[in-house]
Length: 132
Image (cartoon, rainbow, N blue to C red; front, side):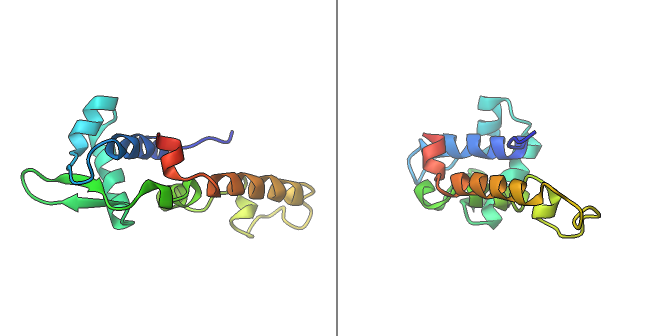
């Protein structure tokens, strides 16, 4: 089944929450976790990963937290998902040619077309379109 992971869902929820705050306002992971019933340790790891990717800026100190460090209209959904989960692909052979069935596979090309279509849709959506 094709679906977004919880990690991506939680990251999108955090982005939506932060997007509707003034740009200079700092948001704590605890605040988002409590608001949306997200496990705080998992959300903290997600925000740390997004900080490494420079999507959010970490603010140190007792009143620290995170704030957006880029406009969400500059980041595609495809890039965002790949930051969190790696390359988009419906089947492993689209990502790695080490499949045992590669030489006799009769669905690789049709699946590749589907995969490319899905990737194009994700590439043409920006985060602000998703999180409005």
